[in-house]
Structure formats: C-alpha cells, structure tokens
Image 1 (cartoon, rainbow, N blue to C red):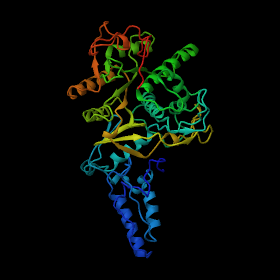
Image 2: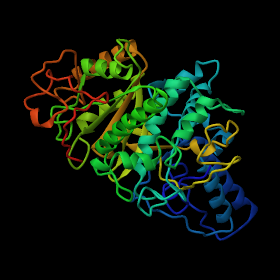
Image 3: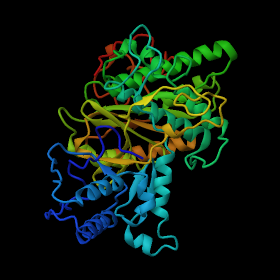
Image 4: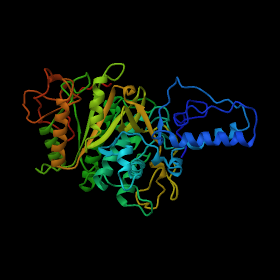
Length: 481
C-alpha cells in the first residue's frame, strides 16, 4: 500500500523508519558497496521502533540523499519499499515494537517486549492491533461524483476533510451497533448485508443517506457549503439535523428510521461555543432515548458528540492527559481533530502520539459491480478495499487543533451508566478544568439549548421540555466556530 499523497515519506525527506542511513560516499558500484548498502537498509528495517507507524512529517526535516554511487538507486528503491505500510507484515513488522501500550477505540493492545516474551504467541499483540486498525471504516477525498446541490463541485479535495473525518466516526458507531466492537473485516466474500449496507449509506450521491451531498445540505444553517472548510462544532450540528431529517422522512414513508440510535450533541452553558465545559445531562439523554423509541420508557442506543474548544491558538497542555484517557473508554469512537485546517479521524494513542486515519487521499467515484467506491446496498461481492487502510499514521498530541469533537457510543443503559461513571472520574482528575461534566437532575429554570436563557455556571440546570428528539429546542441561534 502506498503512502497518501503529500503525506508519505519520500526519499528526499527525513525518513523516520530509515533515518541515519546516508548514501555511500564512494562512486564505486562494486558488489561490496551494493552489499553494504543492502545490509544497511535491512538493518534499518528490522531495528526501527514500532515501524508500522508512519510519522507525521515536520517541515523542518528536509534532508535528502545524494546519489554518490551506483548503489544509490538500489538504496532508494529499498527505502520506498520499506515505507509502504502493507509491506511491513511481509517484512515482519510485529517484531519491531516499543514498550508502550496502544489504546485504540477503547481497546488496549499490549505491545511491550516483556509482555510478548512471556506470551505463548509473542506476535499476537501487534497482529491483533493491525487487524483491528485495518478493519475500521476509512473515508477519504473523492472526485468525479455528481455536483453537490446547486454548486459545480464534483470533488471535495482540499476542503472536505472534516466531513470525511466525521463520516468515519459515525461509520464506526454503526459498525459497533450492527456488528459489535470485536468485528473484523472478513477475508472472504460474500460480505454481510449489515457491513455492505453501512458502506452504502456513505456513498457520494444524494441517494445515500449520509453522503457529503446530504451533510452539506443539512448543515447550511451552520455555515456548511461546498468548497468551504468547516469546524467540528458545525459538523456535529449538521449530523444532528441530517439524522433528524432522515428519521422524519423514513417514518413518514415506512414507519422506521435508518439511524438506529438516538443522537445527543452535548453542549455547555453557552452551547459549548465560548469555552464553557459541555454538560452531559442524564435526564436529557433519557428523554432523547424515549423520543427515539416513540415515547416508550425503554432505553435506546445513543451516540454522543461532544464539541470542544481546548485553547486559543494551540491545545492547552493540561487537556492532553484527559483526551488520552477518553480513548480508553469502552464507549470511545475517537476524535474529530488534527492540525489546524487539516482534519483527521483520531482513533488511538501511544505515549504522546495520536494515531489516526487520514482522509487526505483522492479516490475516484465509481459505480460498478466489480470495483467500487460507491457501494450498492445489495452488492455483497463488492470490492471494499477503498474503505480500509493499513497505514497507521501518528501525530504529536500537542499539535492537535484546540477545536475538536469527541464521540462515544453507548449500546444500552448499563453502557451509558458506565460511561457516566468514567466521565465523572475523569472530572475528578481534571484539577478544575474538565473536558465535560455529568449531571443527573435538571431544573426548569434554565435551558441548555436556548442561548438566550443561558447564564451562570450551567452545571445543574437544564430544561428537557421542548426537545425535538435530537437535543434541540425550537428556537436556536448558533455562533459558528
């Protein structure tokens, strides 16, 4: 598998996998020089720590190899091969590990040398992580689809990364709901109807429920438009509107909705837009579940989206340990975030590095029975390889844009209670600056969702009357980030 355009490691840049191997200085092309060059490269391959990772490249690293010998071409070729993510399995990447654990969407992978040396299957930790990572739904830039609404845009290249990142997060929620957290992409066809049905919903046409076309249409009132970059807060609100609209449409047609869970966009005292900590209110969540179940008292699965602003120009370091811990929650769906102006889907963490799926690769939009990016709902033999990625990329946590959103999926009431318990413990560790808080009771004196009535600390007073089933009241005035 090749590196993503503009993101991969090139021979002309500092190579985190093979750094320190200079080209031979001699102009000789003798067999001895060639052998030494090959040994140097192979030594780099098998000694690099956790070399399945492809590091985010810093602009300061710009050293290039100089072709001083006949062996340069061979060295350059091997460097390219070594940096291809899928090649690492062939080269035995599971032997190149660090001593730190990886947390990935609420699951811990033990990768330390001691853990592996004491295990009967010493390579299982790395192999299991790679299988989990490559089974997650990967959605990227595309071009060649029908024009979006009344615009002329047939591609989202250079502006649609936040939309694509959000699609990945919601797609994982649907995978967890229909197929479970332990699901892995099957190696053989035919695929399950649930898996294919989920991919179909994220196709690039108005006929697909959660397409970029429909998301932009739903988010118009929050500033979403073809050709414009959008922030995580507006993106969460666009999902809220789209889910509600789709549910109303499907219920009118066949009595059923196509989004199998309640959606709760968690806000704070001033709707989370001006730095106030968002408040997860248990009563609000219960009301949303009741509305989802058509006023029945039973609890329903629920997706929580928590938009946050954790600094001004850069992420406040005090929040980094808290963000890392959210990825250890069993309910974790990851984070919409990345470097400023460059959104990614952050799904894991190791030490001080965020592990992410990158939407910045351009794929052609094709509708085909053999190879497709837009998957037909009934095509259980479809080629789904463009929806999965084997290259694990990483980014320093302190480089993440302070404007981000966290996602959680709770399958039932017990799962939600466990989430609230973990979130409350996280508040206790926050030293007065929590990511978000949790409250149980509500008072009718304040409305979380009505900006005009918000004042004070907003921690204990939330009016659940007048919610429309998605966490909104009838009157709203949003300030878009």
